[in-house]
Length: 119
Length: 364
Image 1 (cartoon, one colour):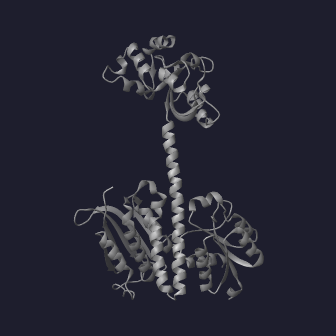
Image 2 (image 1 turned 45 degrees about the vertical axis):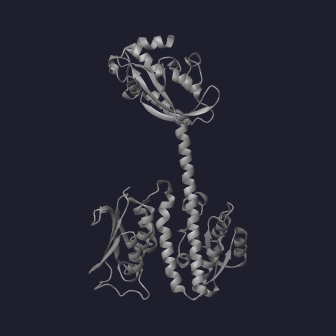
Image 3 (image 1 turned 90 degrees about the vertical axis):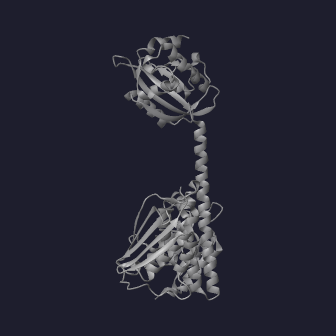
């Protein structure tokens, strides 16, 4: 298993959710990095070889995960959208093809869904 | 007034669509039915009705207005002399929806009755929402004679619709935030459980908290109504146990219930689903659970909500499975339900668990 080589990205402006998801990766002996905004997320993508990502859609202050999603899509890195705002996701991210997981959902479920996409 | 003389002269021979006539009928109560009405009565009705009315003549170039009543003048701010002779489009303005205008054109073209809602403008430039009913009027020979238009100012209805939209947007925002709060609570519970080496406990707590959160999702999205759509709450609670969407068979109608009944129902269903995942129909590949709900009377004749749960296709269950150490989820379900004077009955039938939740509810 090459799991220990992989790095995953968690983008969420809420630190407790980001931390919980990071731990859920660690429970599976997977390494994850987290970012609270697009700027850091894009830096993470540049720096690490990201295998997959979990993106919160609304990042506060009207910011969405659009820039990060576009960059991941450009690099063909699988990701899913993790959001409590199902109604407006469609409007904001209609162009991005990614599964949506509705918040709240246990963190290990969210991670499992992402891993299932990668397999 | 010349227009009204014209009207009187024609009144006897007018024949109109039923819809167009209704406004007059309402105003002529206590007297003879419309057919026997004299021109005078007709004129009084036209003068007194609060409904703005006009007639146009499609046989003249550009279908001009040939008559309008006082209410029409009051509504639009124009004098009769400024109105008669012009096509109705002079009431339109920059924000008038051209799709609605097209509907008017079509109705005139097809000589049909139509109701459209459009933004019109008064003489002073102010705008109002106008519900326009229009329809053809034929003479005794069946020849198209006039078009009838009645205008109704529905600006206040538009206003309340805007408020309703605003309320819905607010409800959505609250719903979004609350989902986030539940997600954060989940994070706190998990992180605490990890740090205290109590993951199994934290997982159980979390599952119940999240089930509770899901139970309330439909309420939040639908907050204005004040009651919860039972079927939506049930689907929402059970959705994580059925990722493929093929393990639950739902049967029920649009029953609604009080929000405070939902926590007991949500958590009970969560325990049933958890049990089914461990021991029952959801532990095997083919098993399904039939879930149905309806309003009924309980044994004491109270209005109740009845939810039936039937598992089949799972492993054979000879008897009730041994309960988890440290109290089963069913204990919690029983406690919550009994507090609300409800019951959970379980029968371990050979092909799977059959359970029934009965909960008295206020009649809504």
